[in-house]
Structures are given as C-alpha cells and as structure tokens.
Length: 97
Image (tube, rainbow, N blue to C red; front, side, top):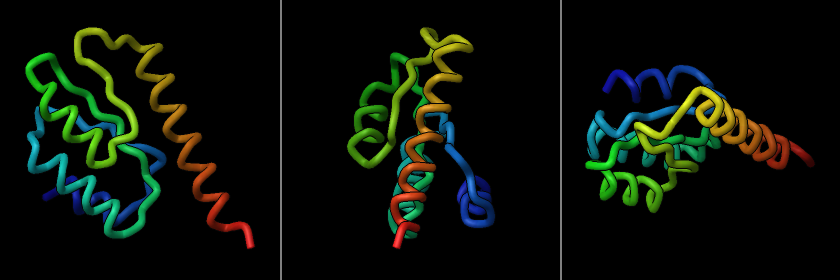
C-alpha cells in the first residue's frame, strides 16, 4: 500500500519494481498506473524463480524486464534511462495541441 501511496502523491520518471514484492503488489501498481492513464513506465526486476510473475507483469504493462543476477550498473542505468526517455516522449506527445 505504501508504494501505491507514493505513486499517487508524486510524479516519477520511472519505477523500478522488484518481483520480490509479489504478484499482488506488482499488479496493483501496474493497474493503478493504467487506471489513471499515468505514463510512468515500470521496469521489473525478477529472479529466475519469478519468471511466471515477470511474464504476467510484462503482459500487464511493465515496460522492461531485468533479470536479477545478470544486471550490472550499466544495464540498470541504460534500462532506467530508456524508460524515462519513453515517458518524456509520451508526455510531450500528449501535450502537443
């Protein structure tokens, strides 16, 4: 619930959500963003034992998936920068008259 409270209170460039939060929390965040037409992208971090959750998260709207154990600082930074860039482009596209 605290993650949803934060999403509702502030604007974020991108959200990094760890699959260890569980399916319920992940789906609540994704559905909240969709319901409010919020362009904030969600990058999902999942481990090998969370591949079903990762697949469900991607189907439900996560923008990218990073596999825990194979992520380094460069790949994390690149994924977050890309997702934030997509968000900025989406915001610009909706604000053009």
